[in-house]
Amino acid sequence: MIRRDDRCLMLSMFSVMLLVAASACTSHAVKLSPEPPSTQPQPAPAVPSTAPPQTPPDRYLSHIALLAHDELKGRDNGSRGIDLAAGYIAGQFAAAGLEPGGPDGTYFQEFTISRPAELLDETDLTFEGASVEAIVKADFTPFSFSTQGDFEGEMVFVGYGASNPDKEYDDYAGIDVTDRVVLMLRREPPGWDPDGGYTDHARFDRKVELAAEKGAAAVFIVNQDPGEDGIDGLMRFRARGEDYGLPAFHVKRHLADELLAAGGLGSLTELQQQLDEEGRNASAPLAGVRVTGTVAYESKDILARNVIGVLPGTGPHADEYVIIGAHYDHVGVRRGHIYNGADDNASGTAGVIETAWALARTPYRNRSVICMAFAGEEMGLHGSRHYVEEPTIDLDSVVAMLNLDMIGRLNPDDQTNMLGIQGLGTAGSFKEIVERRAEEAGIEYLPEDSARGPSDHAPFYRADVPALFFHTGLHRDLHQPGDDTEKINAQGAAQIVDLAYLIALDLINGEDTPVFAQVDKRAEIFRSTGPGHGVVMGIMPDMDDTSDAPGWRVARVFPRGGAAKAGMQSGDRIVRIDGLPVDGLDDYRAATAQKEPGDVIQVTVLRGQEEMILDVELSARRRP
Image (cartoon, rainbow, N blue to C red):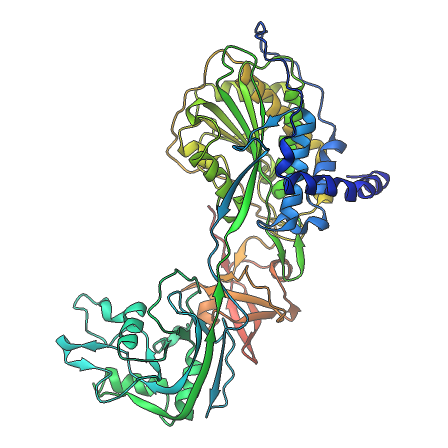
């Protein structure tokens, strides 16, 4: 815990520290060239067995307090906050005496992260001849192959939007759709595929391509009758750079029904029955109904930076390397809340900084050391994967990689947040070294042979580099605003940093080079089983929702889950559970804290402008 006086001192220094960090980052860390330790060959001493000077918990915590400060806005990739964090880390490496390790002589290795296209606010639909309001992502969404731009035209229903000569079937027969907006059903008439599946005529892209050939101005595709489960979800927009020359949308059934009724064609269910059961062509104009619309989206690649510092070895194996790394990015700001990521992963980044300082002051290093902070982990291990694909040294010379990720919640009395060390089976020497050093340090740990897990050691392991992963487990605050500095166990994390230093020192100074071994199983990370973690509704929340609309938006409803059985739909906004207001995951956990699998909760959702109350049966969360 930071004392009040310490916090005031740190905050008073914060602006100066950020200015230094920003200067270092924007100038690409200006090749700060510290005086390197002597590179003259030295006699190899015995590997030390005594503990090094202990990492001061207050100093360790000061790194976290800065990296997880509100001013950095959650260190989202591509943000000013993560640039400031990168500059701070580079400054620490330089001050400790590490040489720049980037490919251009700085402390940075730049790379780009390709992001899926995002819809812009200009995306919109308006209608004439029908009193209909359509909200993007709730009532409609463009397909990934939709072209951008404006369009308008009269609306025409064209059945399944299919033309199949083998079945003597043509929804476009007898109707001109040139410069009109076509509305069609998803999939195809029953029985076209003899195996009970679907033919190419059912594909979204095939329907849109055919409509373009017929001269349509735009395409609306609506789901078939959902049956008893009531599911009527929308495809998620992810532009893929390919289009068929016209805007194309996935729309909800209620929107299509309102448009069809206004155009005098009855209900969608009736039209589908006419097609499926009676075999009659149902294509017809929607009398008096016109639509005007716009599709607008953009894709911005993110410039990201790994921060790299090098300590040259001074022994006969100086051309071999031990890498010590941690990711320093987090998830930024969502719905007005800052996700500071103190444990995930300012805690591991602070550990790398302190380990760098300790190793720089170690008199003898047989092998060289690379200390690294990765960007892009939260978006899919981009930084570590980029380094493995484009390493700054020969990857075959890397004898071990140590990864620190979420080491700030140590609780030796709770298996959920004990220290876990993964990858013990990836080199023959690892188990002996870790067991001996942990016993000396008096730290109990959960051993795991495998290094197949979701953090930055994994790309190295897949490249046949022996890898160790240090972590203290998951918790309620993971990817939540509650992951803040005051919840860090600095004393415990400092012990882990000291242990990682000693293990690294054995690998740096050991006579034998670790030999890679593959472990063919996935590693297990313990998850909290406390209140709010044991039950689920069967939904995926929309983590990209940045709107000011009330409630917790549902991105996906899983089939056969309690939410699906109750009639919940993607795009619904959960506003209350058992009368308690809900605006995010923390509110959901609070509302279900005392619930058990099989309990039924009353969920109030907002669908468009209508509130609905659904009785949702909870089920047990699956364990990894």
